[in-house]
Length: 286
Length: 207
Image (cartoon, rainbow over all chains, first blue to last red; front, side, top):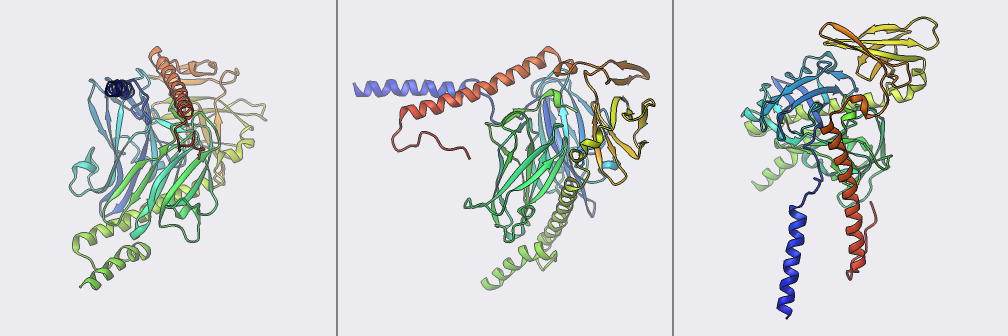
């Protein structure tokens, strides 16, 4: 009797589990989306080396045409005013792009530094994937960061298809051994946002007062962590919590860069609270 | 031997990073350390520039009062050509057609987008003028293939983007998905609390 009951419970449990696992569910990070924000960097380091970004676009849903428009960190449009169109003829096709092919490396408004791009499929609404390769390389050809054996400090992440209207965070930073950490915040849309950043040590103790920063529309703000907080004796490791002054709707997104003296680099998207996220809307496309 | 190794370990990372000095190390790692220093300094510079720009008086929000002195009537976007049709609200004269770099009342046009333009003052202060939509004053002049056409002001809302059905459906699905996720989460939490699992709090406070 007990065995039979346990068996039934197990079967029902498995069925429920199957429904949960196999059923349609929204991704917690909906980055395969028809509107995406992409981190952009192009900084000469000397000796022919650049800290730069490569994009790999993949037409994973169908043969789309992706339009890419970029901005510098002063919310100015850079590159061709109409953007660069990347046409795909088949599902699964990929295309590599660099700041040069996107026409931003030669733009006087973006000699070097940080920026971001809005990649958009407007006509068909087909979703696509973007792989962002970041690293130090002397090979500026498309795909050069990953193809060149001399590339160093290489990190990879995805284009971001959603924003947070409230909570997000950097799970972990460290300055141990001379490592350096940088937070990249992007307001991909046009409404100015006010963000509050709180610094914690690895034990969860708040460090100093929160940092309040205004983020203009289409703006990018980079902060060195934990230096930006101005704490007299900052923790050598910890986390950062970010909140915004709006309970719902669209907000901000971001990336986090952590470079280590041993040639390693972390390049990760900010963790956005799933309660506060919204997919980037077509209406927000520049 | 161990003492030497620990001394090198202590000296390299922090000292290099803090003082920007290259100390003795094997050839390969010395090169990496040099690149690390260059990279760190470059990232710090880019970060400082970004922070300075965000804190400078170029914040357009600070200057929104001033922006009422100007009215953006339309924009021209044709290839690399970017023009803005701007009216001085206090002037009885007609609107001015400005190209990038052109000035009006001491403000220089520095950026033109489909729905907004940016003007920069003589001290670097900036203001964003948004195109008047739906109020009868706005309009976009879009040139295509050398032939100009003037688009009349369009109504507010998403329809201004003339979205295909597939995209509207996608956005509707996205909204429904978000609502469904939130409802499911509430149901799950309520179910969990109702089941009264011993030793477990019904719910955790939001951070």
